[in-house]
Length: 154
Image (cartoon, rainbow, N blue to C red; front, side, top):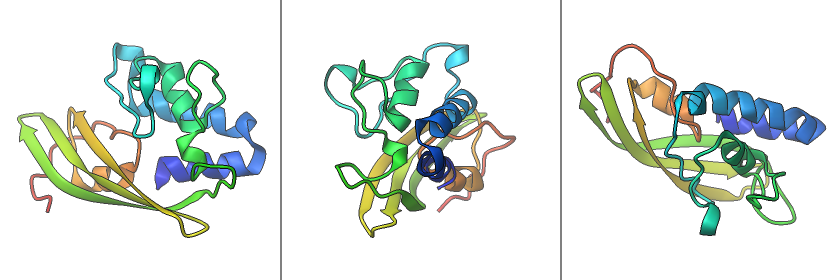
C-alpha cells in the first residue's frame, strides 16, 4: 500500500497541494519517464487517454487535476462522489518470468478502502531486476530495480 496509501494520506491531509508533488516523486522514482518512453496503461484509464506516455499523464492518473486526462485520481481512493481512501493493499503474484537480469511479473493487487469497498486491479510489470519483497511492497507503482531476481516466488 506504500505508494497509493501515502498519496491518499497526503491528499486527505492537505489536498492536491500535498498529494500532487508526492505523486510526482513516486512517478519519477518508479516509472523512469526521465529515461525515455514509458509503456504505462493505468487500470482505470480509457478512451483516447488510455495510455500514458508522459509524466503529466501518469501524475494525473494518480491524483487527477489535469483536464487533458479527466482522471479522478486513483491513489486518492474509491471512485465516485463519496471517496474513501485506500487503507489496505495486497499483491497476488501469478508469475514472474526471469530472463537473465530482466523479469516480467504479472498478478493482481487487491485494495480495500476505509469504508470497506474493495477493488482488484491487474498489474503486469517489466523490470531490470525484481524480488518477491519488492513486488509485495510495490502495490500500484512499478518496482524499483534491485540486485538479483528471486526465482522462488510462489
